[in-house]
Amino acid sequence: MPAKTPPPFTLPTFIDSDEGPTGNGIMVDQVGVSAGMQLIVWGLDRSSQRSALENFTTTYPAILNTAANLQSPPFMPDWVDLRVVAGETTRCVDYIFVSLQETFSQEPRPDILAQLKDVINMHPILSADWNVTSRADKTRRVYFLPGSHGTEVVKARIEAALAHRNVDYQHLFIMKTSSGERIVVDLLHRDHVRELLDKPLIINQTTYHAHQPRFIIPKFGYDIAITGCGGIGRFKAGMDAIIRRRFNGEDIIAHSRMELDGDTYVVVMRSSELATTLVATDLPHPLGVPSNITLSSPLYLWFFNAQSCPAQSRFLEPSTTTMAGDGAVQPQLDSMREHINLAASTFNVVLRAQNQHISEIRNANNTLQNAMALTSAITDARFRLMSVQNEIGRLEADKSTKHTLLLLAEDKPGLVATYSAALEDIQGRLLHANREQTQANDDLQQLLALNKARLLSHPPPEQPPQEIGQHDDGPPTNRQRMDDQMNE
Image (cartoon, rainbow, N blue to C red):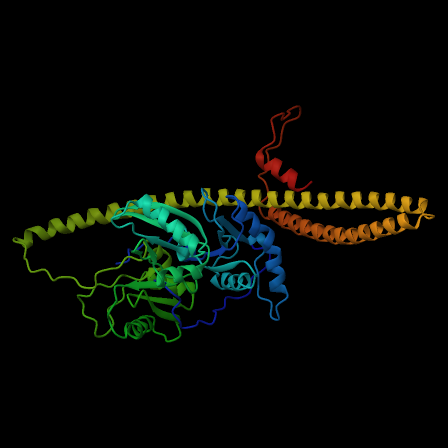
């Protein structure tokens, strides 16, 4: 259960506008409409592999305070209701992924995440948006093709050119793909993506154009895509009409748009139940669209992005050949189709079980990572408070010494002026140190409150009762050490 009861589901106000380069779907057994309900938060500390997680942990109380001070405060999930995942586990990056815990609500709540996204974007440093994929941040990634020059040579040239343009990046590396090698750059700022796309690098009279992966930024988490409609006029209006007619209602579409230069239709239904039904529905072609144009089945945008938004051929060439002995071959084809369907069904069952097992492992790992991040943040806060307290003690002792010397030198005007100035300086530093102590203590108490809530929502497993005379002399577990340290 969530730490506090969320309000009823509400839809946001959608703005009909294309957002930058957001650039035959396979019907996937729905692992849940909530698969794409995830935010990406960037602008965090990236000094280590865990620093982004720790930075967001210590910043979240300030985000809650920002929401509470708004004229109409939105509902904000408590820390224990969030599932925070590191952006990458092998490299230092400035972003994390945030979603709601599965125990928060029986229904997907993209409206809560949308409100959280808006409040995070009020932060002077951090930014948030709907996440595109569970892997690298594609929205700030560009790549260059080496051409006829050596990849390592071009990589060095691009590094120098980006430094000359003052373009900051997190990582620059060579990626091998099925179509060849490319130089990939993960930038720090989205503005630099547009700059590199509009103004290619010119190095030694050779032009290197920046390319960007194909993706579509969701509007509401459970967006649904239909692709293969490029070049078809008024496709949006036609598909809107098809969906409304199929559901026998006008008030079922919250928002729809065309993306990827008109090749993909994206729709947001008014509820997650409607979205789930639409994904399982075979839709006819809109009026006027030839039947030999290949349109994908409705597919959650999350899965479409995971496939890198493949560009599909719109036309199928009609078959001009006939098979001899169709009557004899058809039963064989039917039998083969049955075997294929049975194998596919069995595979889906195994895949679902495997995905569930992987999801449980990931959830346990994420819970441990969040606990470790909170432990580190509490340790740092305690160290900061202790350092300030030591500084206050040193200043108090220095103040006492200077005061004694002032009394002893009362008949020496020169020394009196010197000691008086020193006492005034110490008093000012004490005032500043006391303010720091108050702030450090407030920060520590907030983190301890977060940890207390974490322990209440994820209590350690109960140990079986021991018989009389039975003693457990084994070493404490990592979880016990962590909880003991955080409650000291």
